[in-house]
Image (cartoon, rainbow, N blue to C red; front, side, top):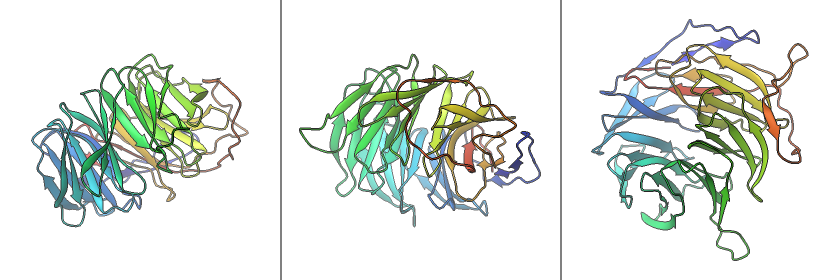
Length: 347
């Protein structure tokens, strides 16, 4: 991984690099443990690999899938890893010894996305078969079948209180599913507005939902009523990944336009654009350490930024779609981003 400082003038320091062990084939996905000590990658060779992020050492290989790995996730306590594959299965692994807890079969086509609930009791998977399944991890059985999308489910995420699951699809919609079985609660809400495949969804700690699409926009939603807060349209390429800061006041977006945008969700304004050798970025996550790391062919900096500055005017690249929400402004943040389209992983 590469760690470098980004100054407010947008310059990079490319002095330090670390190269991880090679996969045999293209790396499709990665995930970081909550403490950022562990990095998990999945590749076309069907292997899941676990690295010590700080030392760069390979901790273990997880070998069972018969097809490319499309998505990986780590539980909030870091005890379990989930991998989704083109072979139509999802496997839940023990991190400590790379043993299999469950091999989950229920999808009929490639599984594109997987996410743990924050309490670690549920797992959501989304597939090319147009369905999402919610798995009970105490039993390894399907708890809920989420049907209604008319095309591939590309992404999914649990809200931080585990009351909702959001799924994004190639049918251009986001669906918000209630995990609370209450007749007074709407069980599925369809969020319309995107004009391209929905590729990324993320919840903030404040309860906001963000969705990113091939239509080059990000939409910010209020989950409890499905109202649209902002449309963020500063990217010139499709949106690959999204992440909120821990306090929920800042959103980072990775674009296919070789940029990372930093958004103030209080105003919907673009506070900062990071550019330069970012074409391979695939995922991002904030950290409180102040270190911004990258993997793959991409280069990403450590980030120190302000949501607004006396010397900078924010981008006018948003459309307000409702009453502004009362969120605190954040003055500083750190972003961790990873990219890995080559078999080498640089960090």
